[in-house]
Amino acid sequence: MSNNKNNFEGDLDEFVKKLFGNKKDSKTVKETTPKNEENLNASNSDHSSNKGPTPIKKTKKPLNIKQWVTSAIILTVVFATLIVVLANLYVVKENEYKVVRQFGEVVKYESEPGLHMKIPFIQSVTTLPSNLMTHDMTEEEISTKDKKRIIIDNYTIWRVTDPKALISNAGQLLNAENRMEELIYSALRTEFGQTDYGDIINEKTSERGSINDRVTQRVNELITSSNFGIEVIDVRIRRTDLPEENEQSVYTRMISERQSIAQKYLSEGDAAKQSGDAKTDQEVQVMLATANKEAAVIRSEGEAEAAQIYNAAYSKDPEFYSLFRTLESYKKTIGDETMIIIPSDSPYAKLLSGQLE
Image (cartoon, rainbow, N blue to C red; front, top):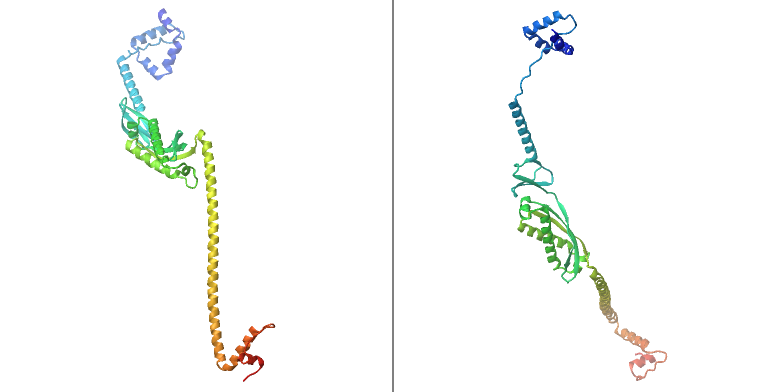
């Protein structure tokens, strides 16, 4: 009896909660053995205090270690598989290529945006740009056709067209840029070697545009033959300068050339002026001669017509015409101091003396 009393000490509240506050606990209490019920009744009859019945201890089931190990292995495998899958997914964005390599060799490349997957532990992914790119080239000193040294500063617009060919033949993007720059300067040396310096710097007759077009075409031909997987869109000369040691001599020569050109223009202007004056004088002389000729013709025609009129008028009275002509001749030949020596019996003298028949 004393032992049972000690068992209830400190556990009565917990036992009451389990007995009346939880259905599962009440069910457990109902399933107690008759022996326990008898012990409880005996204890209750001996003790009329407020102590509750002795709590019933539940037996714990033994842990299943094999089941726990199996679950842990399954979770580990699932988690590892998820990590591997996520690690081998790659996203293709706009304006880029994703190049897939297998043991260092390019097997394919993706250019369409989207989600793709590679083979784990075997394949790797490299990113290359697919948009237009600008490459600022280093300054280079080049000789022209007239043996003048100039410094060329230009830039190039280009893009990647075949990532597989680029990686196979150039290795990486930087190598492709370096090779492209070498080809561009090779083409520029060829073109500038066939062009005079004056034709390059002259604003009116500058051949920079045609040189740029020819260089672009030539470089693309060389790149295509080498199969670098890139395309040059445009090559542009940004600036042309002289080496510092040649600037002053070239400027002096340019000044003398411009002065000689100006003197040539002045001489050509004077020659054109003299030629214009001579041509004008010639045209004036021709016009005057033509006018005099036409005036003479008109005058002769008038005189002929007047003579015809005179003849028609004088033929009506020949004697009067003879007298009139004689009088007209007197008017023209005899002046205030005129001396005429003629025979006295001449008709001319008779008329003067008034002897008329």
